[in-house]
Image 1 (spheres, helix red, strand yellow):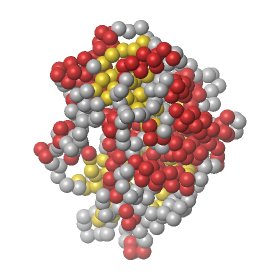
Image 2 (cartoon, rainbow, N blue to C red):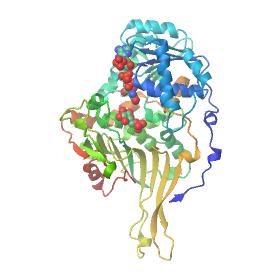
Image 3 (tube, protein in one colour):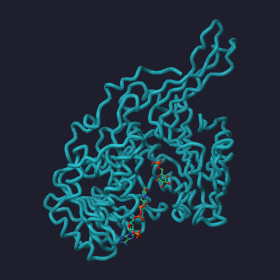
Image 4 (cartoon, protein in one colour):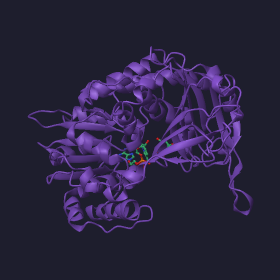
Length: 516
Ligand SMILES: NC(=O)C1=CN([C@@H]2O[C@H](COP(=O)(O)OP(=O)(O)OC[C@H]3O[C@@H](n4cnc5c(N)ncnc54)[C@H](OP(=O)(O)O)[C@@H]3O)[C@@H](O)[C@H]2O)C=CC1
Ligand SMILES: O=C1O[C@H](COP(=O)(O)O)[C@@H](O)[C@H](O)[C@H]1O
């Protein structure tokens, strides 16, 4: 292993330094519809607290939680405190103290509004609390309510921006369940809102390393000249999870791995790798380039796709091994379920930079390891020089962008093994984020919430980008709906279905090992 440079921990920037140069967001109210739910407890409240600790919320910032649960303001604050204790202060191995001043200010301006999303009275009462103020409406609700809430915001006049007051809506995923429903939802939202008011979230865009793909590509002179069909053989994008469907069986049965991960998260990764340099970080400049890449991707062909479902298996070895249930044995799953928990596919980007370079995507639950990464496989160097040496093959050059759980970049290449003979060994140069940058407490939602508060849509999906992702996977969804999509099975705790290996083996390629 070749270490790139010595690490410089003492010079790591602190959280304060990382937020330097950023102004607190303008004054306003953050309204969370569905604020009694899981997303709010685990991610949104911790993120708002972290933003307050970083000094990025305005002194005049308030929170209104809308839900139908029977809660008093005191109950709400108790829940809020529990979520900070569980998801910020006891996160990982480091326990930190509550920042009392920040906490007092935030909770003094947090209130509860009990009401149904479907009831006009809820919007009337909300209107009184936010009158004349900027507001962000966060729809932390099941997807079936997205249209209803936005219709109500429109009809009640709460979506109207006037006299310099801004009104923005953050929409959670899933945004539609196929191309037609995503289009219909876009049309419905745009009846009440201008596109500049709509913030469609994809939490992958809140991940530092996902954002860093553009920085890596375009702030370094060494990568861009190689980033094309002349030098790259193929690209592999992997999002492997060890978890199963947990308690989300009802949702997952209707969704499956393709809908859950591909048109959104994996397409974000594909566009970041594939896009041209935008002319600026302006939201539309970036999203225009993404739209162009998506438009150049041909819809997936069924012969280039593998769907899998996990069956019972085990994790670990010997006495330590843990038995894992199969998907069909999980809660709320049909006995003969045909839902895929794994999907692999080959896509191509038919443009001047990428024509002929396959992009292989795979994602699945209950795999051997949790790992999200992008591996750029470069073309092989000519072998001629080594023909009369003991070298029988060259190590492939692979640049791996690690997204999670570790964040960093690795470059694999060949180096001469010391000694008189010409022998080559595969080596890796490794850059690990944690060696160079300290990471403040973060849920990944801080950046996204802050960006919405300041009106920056760069990290949010535009209507055409969302539809572009659905268009690409639509043939797979149609085939599954018509029962024409084969399903392979794989043991829980391993690497996924064999057929997925076959998808690459056809052209003499292979997946990068998950557990390497
Ligand atoms: N949880 C997570 O980690 C993630 C969630 N998401 C997305 O975020 C959104 C919210 O998820 P999550 O927090 O898990 O959902 P929850 O179901 O936990 O939260 C929704 C809240 O809204 C309440 N509610 C339901 N119907 C009404 C109504 N008609 N009027 C008023 N309140 C109502 C629910 O109450 P009750 O429980 O009584 O029905 C619940 O408190 C979803 O779109 C999900 O896909 C995205 C990424 C991660
Ligand atoms: O949106 C979703 O993403 C998670 C994976 O997110 P990650 O940040 O852990 O990579 C996935 O487990 C879930 O099924 C899906 O709905």
